[in-house]
Every structure is written in structure tokens, then in C-alpha cells.
Image (cartoon, rainbow, N blue to C red; front, side, top):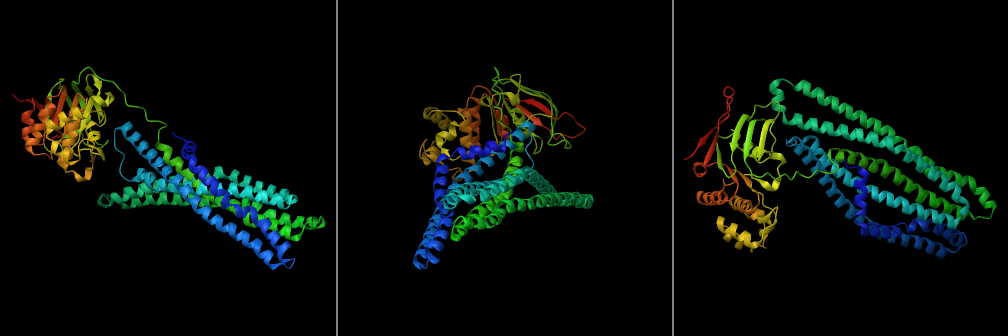
Length: 548
């Protein structure tokens, strides 16, 4: 599993120029943190206390100018942080999708809609993005403010560095020591929230069935228990959060008491009272707010970020293993006692099906709607794994055969925004000369010309369903795959275009399997497999017919 620390460091290291820009603007943003003590001390001592009003106002005006510069710098810092946070959000979505795909391919079942997966992909990604931006802003502000205020204090009155910076460091250390417990509590709260959201989604989608079965009470009790568990985690999180007040008191307000306690000794050493006031300004206006921001930002945003990342990355493998690259000598299809059902309690769509399709065969699969034609097509192409039995391509399990050797074209053809040639050659490579032959065979020349030639940009939304299917069929014609399965991939074409496409694909070397939605498709095939209705009393789900 990918660790949160790796994701965070990767997000920061990827854009060093943005980090440099943030650091440069941060120096200007914390200028008031350095000037405030000096400006207040000089305004009092050299200005107002000495009867020089304009001098006092000038020092305050200098401080006000620094605040204006800081406001401009703060805007640039926010833009810089946004430039880090948005790619970070994209990274998290990538991890979520990769994790869900890994789960789906591992089990050969699509994840259920909604529920925990949807929560992780939406709410927690947005939560992590916002928390990341807040954390970067807070940590940056804390570090730069601490350095600026410490330098200002050391240059104004070095004797107060010890009573100010030591308790400040102690309060910071106390807060950091409490973070592990806060992270665990926050993670438990997020897990409870995810569980509640998943159960609520399930219950909301099954209200009619629950009512019909009289299960409203049990469903309500189960949901109520999850809500109570979530409330308990929230209460524990609130108790731990209250401990942050101790750290803030030690680091932010104990220095004020120590400065006041040190004042008589400082005055006896000749330190002006205005200088003491300036030192208090550093504590109350720079250091205490910086620690408060750290406690609030890291204690809330940081904890939320780490907890959310833990949940987001929980289903993400460290790396998705590449698909096997086994290439069989031929593409003979062999099905042995194949059974498949969509769920452990569902009736099998296919039950103990045996089938042998020699290499180079042209097979049509027919049958009523719901008989399992698309399921069989996916099994033949290795996109689904059977619950029992074997599906072999050239003697190898279908799902372990190199994807370049097998191709499944579904009813809804995949066309992406790119050039015409990129769409035709995907996922391999093909020259314009090779593409021209396929385009000519399928009658796509007019569409290619309309799009501006092979280098013209293709807009999927501007194409009809039939045009998208023709592009996908031309892609199949150009592919190196020796097994092509068409799952009603010509249903939007007229009979003439359908016949031309199927005949062109049948002339290719290899095996062609067509889910036939028209009788003409079955008549063009050399062999037909008709799937029955799957009545429980009849365990033979299929019969073969040879067409003369």
C-alpha cells in the first residue's frame, strides 16, 4: 500500500519552482512579524514618550506599510498553494481509481455503485485537498513567523530570548506529542463516517425491498448503531482536541507571564519600558498567533489530512502488477464446464458450458435477451473470469493472455478526443497508409475528410453512435489481435455497413466471434452458437448449429 508520507512528499517535490515562489513571498508576508516589536518600541521611546508625535506616527506608518506588503504577498502565497493543491487532488483521484480498478480486476467484479467507494472518491478526496492546502499554509506561516519574530526579539532585547522561546518550544513539543492520538481518533471518526454513509446509501436504495420484507426495524437498528458509533468517535475526538489548549497556554501565554516577571530586572539593567512593550508585541502579535495557527491548522487540517490519506490509500496497491504477456501459438477457444453468475446468490447466467472454437473460425452467438450472450463474450475475451470451469485461448487461461492478442468491442464504442489516426491506431501504432486501407474497407473516407484528415482532431460528441462504431471496427481491423469479439458492436449500423465490417474482419487471420443482433450476422458466420433460456430443469444452456 502507498504510504501517506510518500504521497505528500511527491506532491511537494514535483513543483520546486512553486515552492521557491511560495518561500519568496512568505519572506515578504512575515515582514511585520520582524518589524512589530522594533516599530512599537521606537514609536513609544523615540516618538510619543519623547514628545515627537510625527516620529511615533512614522514608525507606525512603517509598520502599516509592511502590513500592506504582507497583504499582497499573502495573495501570491495563496495562489502558490493552490498550484500545489490542485495537482495533489488529481493525484488522490488517481490513487482512488487505481485502487478501485485493482479491487475490480482482482475479483473480476465491478465495485458496487455509491457506498464507501463513492465516499472515498468524493468527500475524502476533497477533504484531503482542502486539508493539504491549509496544512501547507499553516506550516509555512509558522516557520517563517517564528524565524522572523525570533530574529526581531534577539535584536531588540536578547535577555528575553530565553523566557520567551523556551516555553514556546515546550508548548510546541507538547502539541506535537499529542498528534498520534489525535490522528488515531480522527481516523476512527472518518471510518465511522464512511461506514454510516455506505449503510445509508444501501438502505436508501433498498427502501422498497425493506418495506416489502418487513425489515424496516432491523435496518433502522443497524443504521442507528452506526450513527451512535460515529457519535462516540466524535466525542472522543472532541476530548482529545481539548488537550490542545494546554499546549497553547504553555507556548503562547506563559511567555507573557515570564516577560512581565522579568521586567523589574530588565528595568534595573537600563532596558527601557518601551523595549519591554516591544518584546510583548512579539509574543502576543507574532509568536502566540503563530502557535495558535499551528495548533489549529495541524491539529485539525493536518490530522484530517493524514487520516483521510490513510483511508484513501487503504485500497491502493503500491503498484499494479503489469498484465501477463503470454501469447499463445493460436487462438483456439476452449470452454470446459464454465459456470458464471453475477453474485453468490444469483442464478448462473451460464452453467457448465462446454465449447470448442478452432483457430480461424467465424462464430456467431445468438439467443434471446438475457440469455448470457454479452457475458459469454466477456468470458471469451478474458474480461471476466468464470466462477467454475476454464476459458482457454490457445491453451492458456483467457485472462492471462496478452491483451494485444485479444480484443473485445462492446456496443458503446470507445472514441476519445484526439486525432483520427490516434483513435484508429489505439492502443498500438499504425501508419496513415495502413489506416487508409482500413478506412477504405469500411467506407470511412468521408468521415475522415470531414474531421480534417488523419491528423484532424476528433470530437466524440460530434459523432453519431454508428460513426463511433465504425471507428472502433476500423481500429479492430488495424489491431494485431488474432481474437476479435464483437458484442453487438454493429447494432447502430445499417445492414450494408454491418455486412461490410463483418466481412472485412472475417478476412483477417484469426478468430472472429460476433454477438448477432440480426439474422444476417448469423447467416454470414460459418458456425452459430444459440444460447437458451436457462431453465433450471435444463442444465444444458447452449447448443451448437453448423450453418452450411
